Length: 237
Image 1 (cartoon, one colour):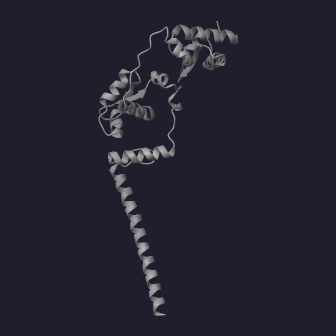
Image 2 (tube, one colour):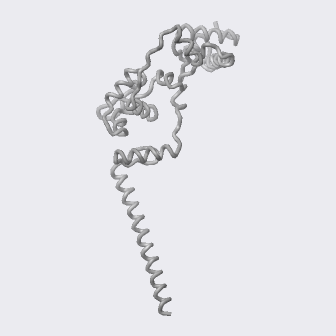
Image 3 (cartoon, one colour):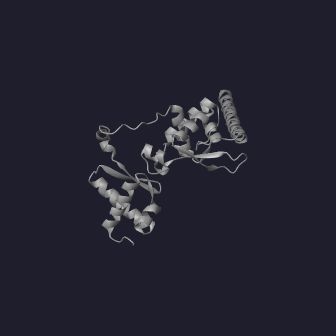
């Protein structure tokens, strides 16, 4: 029977989210309400707003195309007085660096990760998969069909974002600084978007720069020559 009453819709959604105890896809909520997905989204968003408005002990978070009910972060210190503190994996700088590359470049192959980092990344990628922060999202249609890696729903939960589109963007100064540091450390050429330039492209850009420099030098020589002739005429007169 289709649920029409708005309050009853919220109650059904609340019951489903509480009982499941994990993320529930929007299509599943729609099935529970026997409605379309837009109606399900409106119902869960009303419930979410109600929880937030009264600062309830529980909150509802959206994770891509799913919703999940969980404890509100504000009350975590009270929760751990009666519950065991969940064990969290400590991510080393190397693992965090690898995770950042995957998060911003996904789906990405291990070879591309290693090209950016400049070192082998098997251990870091395997560790991220073990922590359920990264998963194999498919295979690249290329020789050897290398695995493509992307971030998981657990990654979104751990870092408090609803989707990868909410990841912070680097400003121009940060991007330029990082690009300069990488070029200097790895002796690689990187464009303004952070992509590695192929050797022919690098050579073309280098040749173009050299031509510009030579042209500048010639113009400078001509200008100096003209100034020199002017000085000689002044001294003759």
